[in-house]
Image 1 (cartoon, rainbow, N blue to C red):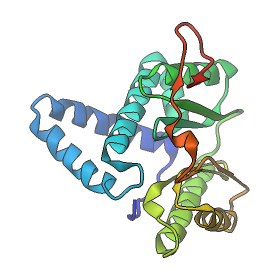
Image 2: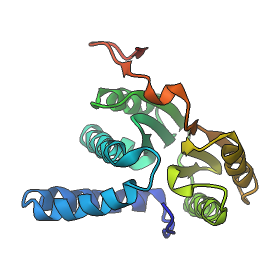
Image 3: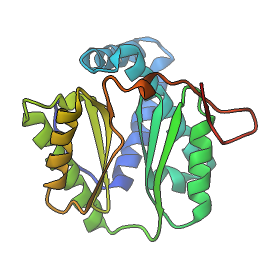
Image 4: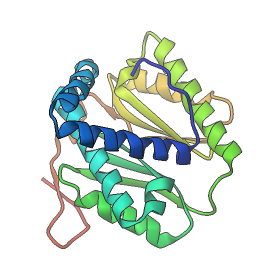
Length: 222
């Protein structure tokens, strides 16, 4: 998305998300509010490589995952972030108990439409408020770099930063574009590590249907 956002600590962002989801759900009961929000999302999604239907589906998947996390364990909801691109779910964040990570992944796989779950959740004490602010700064700086680079279609990427570790999801037009994105990421101050889960536009994996067998957490590809 070619717009800049104010970076906030993750806990604060989660609280704001709760309010936002509540507003969307409440508005949807009347129909009007939902249509306005969907219209705005569709306008932005039409510019993305994944298309309108995939973008809306991804947003619904993400909202469902967040809702289930909040219902099962608010600590999972507060400390773990999710990114969704074409049914591929990236989980990142810090938790203090291994069970929280297990539960977060298990719940994500239970959501309809999920094709893949990439687990980048770390287990250790939560970061300080300073670290949260710095992570937000890193994400903002990288977003700016991608946006002003005329050789990068920035709208196709989403970025999250945890303790200086940058996670990139999205669709690259070609390898040269992806290389530019990674170059920008590695040159952001305070970035200590970069992990890319972006795929190329013509990657067959984008169209692979992954099914989770009933009663199992091990996906199979078809």
